[in-house]
Length: 246
Image (tube, rainbow, N blue to C red; front, side, top):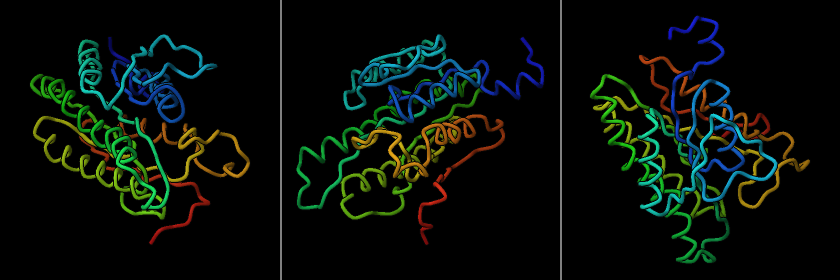
């Protein structure tokens, strides 16, 4: 079916299939919802079911996913391939904060197994699908939602910032290697965002001027909507109230 120009404008992802991790609530859920609104079908992976009060959307297929466990990642990638996935949005992640002397080996394993190993395993298991698409003359897309601290550090953020620096390195390597098989890679780096992250509850007055989950989802949609001849390497997104880093 050929879409008219108005349809393409309102549904830029029509016909697309996108896998999203960390999609039970917050940024991940906002991404899944906005991609569906843009016409995509979404495979939404998360360790737990979508949060209560979130309406089920027909175009979103829910699947249990623990990015730390290879069997779980492999099953998610197989299902994505069965559905004809063309893009992966990796959003799953955890944060843990405190002075360096308080960081334990268990803390390290939780943060790095989720943020770094999880991203590595997803790339490994989705790459065969992306290579198959390239053999058919089609492009694919990996979007990683990291953080603005992927290029800087903050006090009490040793584990978190180190994991984000590692994620940035993985994005850049994936982009270099993936160019040979039609893979575009985008790192989305949001600053202060009002979500459930790190035990917070959205809507607190002191976070009223922060980014919203929908703001980050819009950045992901922008990257995925780029024309085939264009590549969006990274998007840095901050609330206007956040200090400008030099």
